Amino acid sequence: MKSFLFLLSIIGCCAGQDILPEGPVEAVLRKNVTFKTLVDLRDDFITFVWSFNHGSQLVPIVTVTPTGETVAEGYQGRVLVNRTNGFLTLGSVEAKDRGYYYATIVTSEKIKTGETMLRVLGCCEWYALPEGPVDAVSGKNVTFKTLINPKEEFNAIAWFVNNGSGLMRIVTVSKDWETIVSEGYLGRVKVNHTNGFLTLGSLAAEDSGDYYVNIFTAKGVKTGETKLQVLEPVSDVTIRANMSEIVEVNSTVALTCSAKGSFLKFSWTSGTTPIVATNTRLTIKEEDASSTLTIHGSLASDLIGPIYCIARNHLEVEKSAPFNLTVIFCPPAAVLTTQPSVTSGKARWSVTFENPDPCALKGSSAQLWCSFNYPDGETVHKTVWFRGEVKNGSWGRTELSSLPSYQNRVKYLSDQKHNCSLEIHDLRDSDTGYYYFRFDTNTYGWRSKGSVYLSVTGTVHYNCHPVCFVKLKV
Ligand SMILES: *[C@@H]1O[C@H](CO)[C@@H](O)[C@H](O)[C@H]1NC(C)=O
Ligand SMILES: *[C@@H]1O[C@H](CO)[C@@H](O)[C@H](O)[C@H]1NC(C)=O
Ligand SMILES: *[C@@H]1O[C@H](CO)[C@@H](O)[C@H](O)[C@H]1NC(C)=O
Ligand SMILES: *[C@@H]1O[C@H](CO)[C@@H](O)[C@H](O)[C@H]1NC(C)=O
Ligand SMILES: *[C@@H]1O[C@H](CO)[C@@H](O)[C@H](O)[C@H]1NC(C)=O
Ligand SMILES: *[C@@H]1O[C@H](CO)[C@@H](O)[C@H](O)[C@H]1NC(C)=O
Ligand SMILES: *[C@@H]1O[C@H](CO)[C@@H](O)[C@H](O)[C@H]1NC(C)=O
Ligand SMILES: *[C@@H]1O[C@H](CO)[C@@H](O)[C@H](O)[C@H]1NC(C)=O
Ligand SMILES: *[C@@H]1O[C@H](CO)[C@@H](O)[C@H](O)[C@H]1NC(C)=O
Ligand SMILES: *[C@@H]1O[C@H](CO)[C@@H](O)[C@H](O)[C@H]1NC(C)=O
Image (cartoon, rainbow, N blue to C red):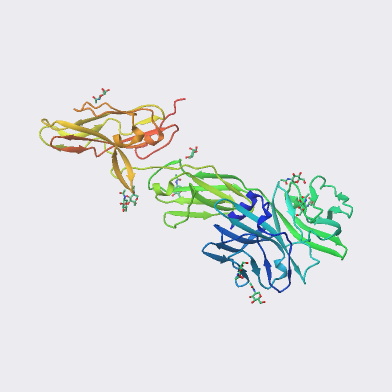
């Protein structure tokens, strides 16, 4: 439901009042009340939600979808929603139900939200404020809403604060709209003359405290009290890894996300897919101002797409920059430079890579020096280079010539006799990996058991054994 609140703040709550009739709605204590709408749920829609602004939180009441409805805990047995027109009936109204209600309809084209106020007669006509506390973000404005009927006449309004240093007046608005603002609040406050709402600008931590209102009407004085909590904004959401951004398959990586702000909660996504802790391969540990995602035995499927960390409190959401973790796959067998000898005739069947772990800079060219041998009398009729890849979860070899990404970038230096060298131009990050060679003679096909591991890099990193450090040419 947090995302829903976020949504409301994005769309700037309640501009579109065209889904609720003009309020306020009045209810009698302990009786039923029905909130009307202007929607038609017989038309296509995705969700229709009624929610209640409980001071610092937007609490869902009932969520209607084309196939059913979900009544939130706390409202079960008390609410009834009409599936034709969206009318909400709330049973046995209590004092705490006073306040602001929102209806939100989501269709494939748009989201519309309407706001209305519920006043409860028979208990609290003289009480002017909805349930608190009110939460707001430091540096932003906050608006304290009242439960005044906008059609009601009032003579004067006064707002007060006690932040621990004693009660002080913030602003007074008299009948002829003369406004007196106290020192320290000049230029920071605005009172709406229709409904008495107080907007307090550019909040600081010292603004936290208890707020009071007195509203003088012809019938008497209405009062109210609420609490304001000023939260630190969410910022500096960053991911750090405990190792280089390139990791070996099967290694354990710990990613730590940290952020600044009040009452933070963290979540992780891979691309747009939420990452959930599975306890075995992925664990997530929450701490006060950080969250640690540990990936045990990292595999490609865990890490497709950049990883994001999202930090939020109930007022704000911030996303980290993308964190790209590239997993390098080591071949299952150890890397061998020389082949175990198999003798047949005089010479041995073998493939030899001169340098099994060359490194090269992105954009440059790399030569994979290679030679092969076979018994006399054989005729080579085919030579193929392969790229080692994880296909469908297991290690395999794919012909280079079938990979579009290598099109026009490879040059076979092979002489079809004993030289199997390969050149790759215009190197890309994705060229990093294992390369294999195979040749076929009229009697036999021989594949290299070992491989060449090519590292393409713009930065210094380490890869699978053997360690290959690249010095940057500046
Ligand atoms: C829902 O509203 C429709 C249209 O106003 C009405 O005909 C119907 O009786 C209502 N359903 C219930 C269960 O109240
Ligand atoms: C409303 O009142 C009626 C009787 O007056 C009652 O049966 C019903 O349960 C109440 N609640 C709702 C949500 O309609
Ligand atoms: C005061 O509140 C009324 C009713 O909500 C609104 O229509 C009006 O625009 C507000 N006035 C100002 C100056 O914000
Ligand atoms: C915040 O309040 C100040 C002072 O009333 C006003 O100038 C400013 O425009 C308000 N900012 C927002 C985002 O409402
Ligand atoms: C209360 O507010 C006053 C004026 O804004 C400020 O000087 C004082 O430090 C605040 N007290 C507390 C405890 O924050
Ligand atoms: C990862 O480790 C497991 C168990 O230690 C092993 O069975 C598996 O082959 C390893 N996978 C790779 C690709 O190295
Ligand atoms: C990273 O953290 C994990 C989990 O705590 C640990 O197993 C791994 O060895 C750490 N790696 C490094 C390079 O510190
Ligand atoms: C991570 O990947 C994203 C999208 O693929 C890219 O925009 C971003 O520049 C990359 N970040 C780094 C640090 O490489
Ligand atoms: C991938 O593996 C699954 C299960 O092991 C198998 O059903 C599927 O056919 C494989 N797909 C390909 C393209 O090999
Ligand atoms: C293979 O051929 C290339 C290109 O002709 C040559 O530069 C290289 O030295 C040869 N390698 C061997 C081992 O003969």
